[in-house]
Length: 300
Ligand code: GLN
Image 1 (cartoon, rainbow, N blue to C red):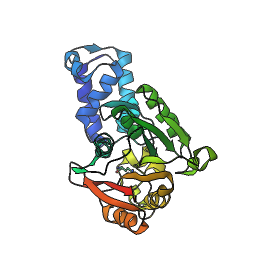
Image 2 (cartoon, helix red, strand yellow; image 1 turned 90 degrees about the vertical axis):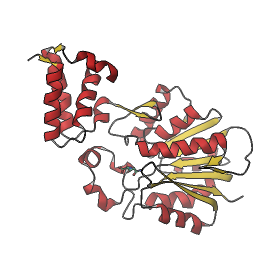
Image 3 (cartoon, helix red, strand yellow; image 1 turned 90 degrees about the horizontal axis):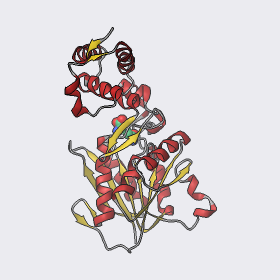
Image 4 (cartoon, rainbow, N blue to C red; image 1 turned 135 degrees about the horizontal axis):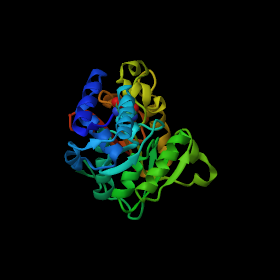
């Protein structure tokens, strides 16, 4: 049955709110824009258009997916991050606005040698080698490569499927990035990396406590990759491993930067302090005033 677009959107909004979708108004419109390949700004011009039967059917099948709890970003296959476009599918976590805080601050470290408002000690010139550890979609590494001209970025992930997505995102955003596949630092133990040390290791590791996962939104717990979320019983498993191993892979004044969960600052800072190889510990908050970023530098 053909239908006026305005009416179609109203039906979609009702069906979505009845299915517990969080932003039915926004999502109904974004699905339509995706179906018709139009920018959101053009949508208003289409409200009175009568949509042909087959397009209504296509729209309703997208709608049913969203109502079943599939995140909008996986349906449309894209997510914006730092003003760039990223391909996403169920093999990678959907990049979050929270993570932009991590990238913003990493860019400031690289381009201005500042953490927050604090000036860091002078560094040697030349290219800045960055490793995005557990890169997922590549959102962090690709954005840094776009925003910091003198960087050499490497992205690695344990999931070959995630590395494949990150590769596509480097291509989509026209940046040259090196890719490795394997569990944390395993790929960098190969002979050809034996002399390699990074200036910065940056990571948004899985940090949700295993016991919290069943209570996450259905969009997250049923569709996003568990391997990218599950941080073990205390949520800190990956931080422990990274903090222990990173000094071997960082230059003398190299930098380790993490995204952290809102309640993890004290535990992560304490691990860094106890380790003995780190100095200049900083933490930064996101726009909602939650602790979100931890920064440390290898002792000189
Ligand atoms: N911020 C994500 C969430 O709350 C978790 C990301 C992560 O574990 N690195 O779903």
